[in-house]
Amino acid sequence: MRIVGNHPWREFAATPQEALERGARLDAMTRLPGMPDFQPRGVFRGSHAFFVAMDEDKERRRQVWFQQHAKRPA
Figure 1: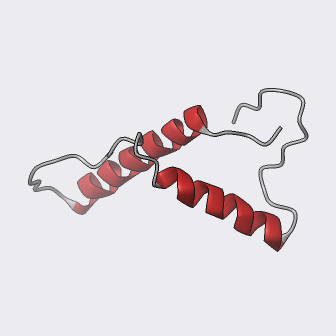
Figure 2 (figure 1 turned 90 degrees about the vertical axis):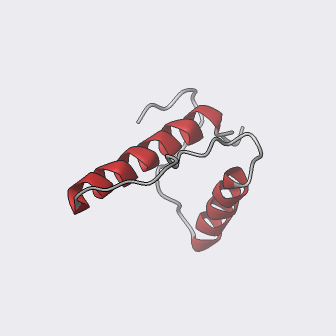
Figure 3 (figure 1 turned 45 degrees about the vertical axis):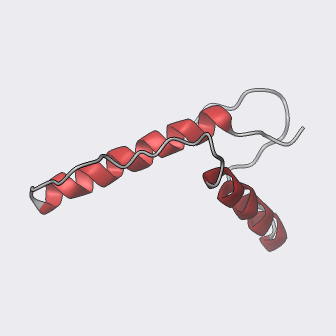
């Protein structure tokens, strides 16, 4: 994880209210019209490990996108 700036940012929420607010912001980000769809198109055949790797790659791409577009509180 890379933290930019000098704001005292914590990885984990300190209070349940803060956790709910962070979750609401993340939910709002997933509804952004500019967020790409990381789900590959088409029909796939493969082993369970293949689909697990596909899901992990999709989640990794989503996390990278969130990190690039996240707005940290000032």
